[in-house]
Image 1 (cartoon, rainbow, N blue to C red):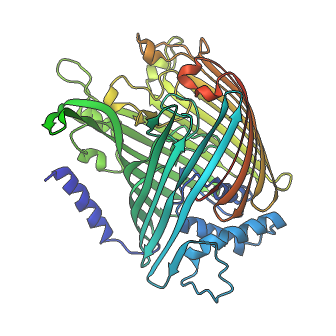
Image 2 (tube, rainbow, N blue to C red; image 1 turned 180 degrees about the horizontal axis):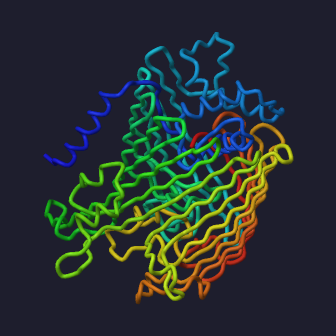
Image 3 (cartoon, helix red, strand yellow; image 1 turned 90 degrees about the vertical axis):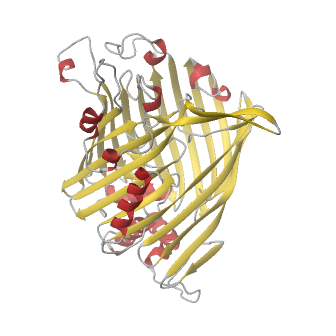
Length: 544
């Protein structure tokens, strides 16, 4: 028996059966951005107070915030009232104890299957969607389908599952492409490929926290165009997540994840012979993530978050990294650091900070700092630099009714997110866990959104992104590498997007994208978007 897994199970069971129970949770995926944007709007207006550093939110959290908006004294305009009523058709399932078709106050959304009584409830829906693209490189498409379900037992257990199979006629993403498309593990088929994504989990909640065993995506760091702590862009991976909020002004989040190293362990691999001949089964090195985030709210709508993380590789999860409140770099110095010959046997650690303020009505200001390596001796050295990424954002909501203006800047120094030991890189399935542009890069992002009618939006956006040398590929010293002394890849794009949510989770959308990429396009850009392109895409989807 694996004693480390036994210890994990014991810790989880001990917590589950010693806490006071209240509430239940299943997580609402961030790909359904409209609900997140709606809550962000009312946080900017001062109607509700939310910590937007950590996502996804749970369905019960969203439901309660919608209830706060409904019961507030704020005078909603026609579009806002329409959207509030629209989203409550879905999230009333969390707010109303039982569902009776004859209850006219329970205006429920369409579900393929739905049941709710005082003890047990569940919802099941299909997933179906497709997007068709046309540009100078030709026409191509992405289609997907599957099913999703969530359930509650009593007032503390939550379960959810989401399975989606995908097909792309042309490959639009891989580990090196600088795109915000979700990371995938393709099964190649000519020029295209198939991939599937299974997400889900089991959660247990009480009156001041929750614990989940899930395989899903998560984001850390305030942003409007890609987080630079944890972006949530990798293929989903299994993790334990703990959320504690014992008082209004403090919140704690912790994650321990089982990553995919894609580094072959030759000693653990095996050669075998059967009726089909001789073959080999390769085994990969284990790889894990431990991360925590402490968030303080010294006064309303002002949040300060700080935390740290560690990527480590070992024969099974290590107990010292299962302690949620640790400063993991210091722990690593005790257990690893260097051997007697002075060789590096340590793990890969990071620190991060996030500040979010909505103290100016209708304005959200935020800043995030991710530090991969820090030495105070480099502060006064003009030839050496620390490895960090910084992001600053501002959003103005409803200064002109139903209009949203966003500006964001991101800069990442060389070798941020990089590591020289292949089993402890800041990656899973080869995809960077942090910002999608990775290291030695910067980005300017501007957008204007107009919502004239409930669930109808028009978005105009400008993006200028560039990336310098990949010093990890070039080798040589890891210190003193200048920021973007040459530009190796560059992208300027202007996009116009319109979408309309006809029924809950049911969308029609039409997009136009002008993009101009140059530099090392074969490495960083899908062939379908090389050079100057005018891309038109349209499609529909039901479910996420």
